[in-house]
Each structure stands twice: as structure tokens, then as C-alpha cells.
Length: 193
Length: 221
Image 1 (spheres, rainbow over the protein chains, first blue to last red):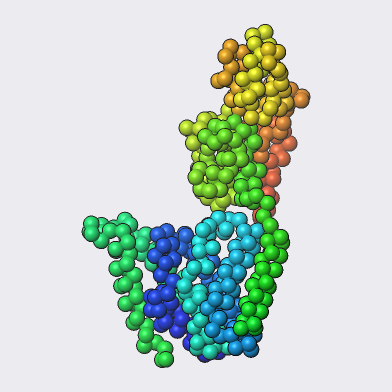
Image 2: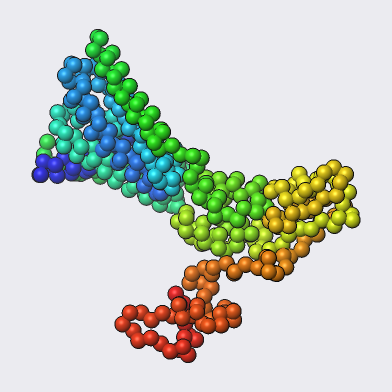
């Protein structure tokens, strides 16, 4: 049990995918202008990341490893992620049109989120088992959601504050992200290893 | 080499089957949200919202391009329904789109009509019958009172008339919006037996039933 708690804390705070590993920066910058869209994106990514983490573990263990095809890992994982995203989109479109409307273009865009592929590949590299992989994927998505929502809230405040001319727009957003990243590095003493 | 092709091909085939199956299983006819919004609109096709009809307006609402308060024929009830469906705040009707008016139909003055067919082309619901150089007339039961046929008429022979309340056109009043319209200020004169008041002032369980006189000060819901 402590093992799973450690994985969760480690992925959410200590080794946060966005602010420490610098993965998935495109949605982090692109979708953080408004809190609502950021929340929608966070929800969709949480779902897809957890599911694709599990699916890619299964594919790797039961399909790639027995045939010694580890060199095809990246391309098969991309295939798995694309399929998971596509099925998710169809199901959401059918079951909840409102959520589908909120997520809009961001749902298919998750396919290109490098954090999703990163989690799948890191799962294999660290040789996690099934439950550990699922926890790792879930923790990574929670960490992603956390910083995305925090960052969008900060950006909403920045838009109404008096920013010096040269720093307006993306410049101040990048500086903010850098400061957040430094703050998250404070967590590095929390879990050993 | 062969196993690599087989494995990746198999994987792709499996995903193809899953996707193909879910494409059939989760098929969405049109846009369900647009359909839902369209159902709430009054279908007068009058264009007072600034869109060519109810369906385009529903699409605009679904895409976030239009506010929900642009439909005068629907009135407050429609805005409340839309606000409920879309989880938005109620906003009063936009005066730029017009005002809520009583239901009207148009009548063609058949003496003056020259049979130009312009009003037939303007009618969004095909409620005008007639042919070129022949007298036209309006099917009164179909007319939604959108008044779109009036501007094209070259001889101004189309007249707006309110629908007279008689045995064939009389309808129950539309249900009041809960918590807003049912109060003592409203005209409940038709309610001879005090049905509505007694329903609204139903005593809470455990509380003794109040007498009829005490219900004059009914608290808002």
C-alpha cells in the first residue's frame, strides 16, 4: 500500500510531469488561458492517460515481450494511444454531448500530448507491474491536472494585472511556469529515490 | 521480421475492429445537443433571433455564438428551459430581438392580392397557398405569426390579425415558471376552487394544516 502511495506522491508532486520532467508542455501552455477549458482538458487527459497507461502495459507485456519486439515499442504505443483517444471521443460524444462540447478540439489533441507517450514508455523502463503502471499513469494525470488548473487560475489573474509591456502575453506565462517549476522542485526532498 | 509485421498488423486489426464496432455502437445522429435545443425552441422559424430559423439558432447556441435570450416567440419560458438545459444563468429577453407579443396570424386581403408569389417564397413553413397571377391565401392553422411575408408584398395586402379566442383556438395558459409566477399578485380568478393555492401552500409534514384564510400571504417558493 505504501508503495502505491509513494508512486502517487512521487508522480503528482516530486516528479511532476509538467514542471519537473517538462513533458506535455504544449497543452500546458495552450489550454491554460481559461479555467473552464483547463478543467475540461485536465479531466479528459486524466481519463486517457490512465487508460492508455494500462493498455500500453498490456500490449507490451503480452504482445511485444514474448515476440522480442521491444524495438517497436514507440510506434505500437502511439497506435494504442491514438485508438484509446478515438474510442474515448466516440463514447463521450454519445453519452455526454455537453462534456463533448466543453472538451471540443482538446479531446483529439491529447493524442499528441507527449506526457501520455512518456508515461507509457517510463512504465516499461522502470519495469512496473500492472497495478503500479495504472497507479503511475493515474498519478501522472493527477499531477498534470493539478498544475494545469493552478497555472490557468494564475494566468486568469495575470490578465487583469498590470504587466510591463515587454513581458505581456506568453512571456509572463513562461516566467510564471518557470517560477512554478522552481516551487515544485522544493518537493524533491519529500520522497527518496 | 515476419513476427514483427504480424504482431503490429494484428494489433492494428484489433484496434480497427474495436473502433469500427464503437463507431456503429456509439453512432451519433447529427448533433444531439443541437437537437435538444431545437426541441425547446418554438419552431416559428421567424428569424427574429437573427438566424434564418430555429435550427440555425440552435446550432449557434450550441457553438456558443448566440445568447439564449434572442427568441421573442418563446418568451421567458423558453429562456428558462434553455438555461436549465445548458446550465447557464437566466437572462431576460434581449429587447433588440423584439418583444413577447400575443399570438398573431396574417391574413391576405384577397381583393388586393395580385398573385406575385413573393410571399409564398418568404414563408418559412409553406403556410401560404397560391399560384402565379392567382389569388393567394394563408392557411391559418399553419401560420406561426412570424410576419416574414409582409416586407416582400408589393401591394401591402397582408394584414396582421391577433388570434381570436374561440372554442377552436383556446388553449390553457402555459404553465407558470416555478417560483416566479404563482403568487397572490397573479390573476387566479379562473381558479374558483382554490386548487393552485392549496397545492402551493401544502403544509409541511408535522405542521398543522393552515386555514384557507391564512393562505393569502403565501410565501414565495
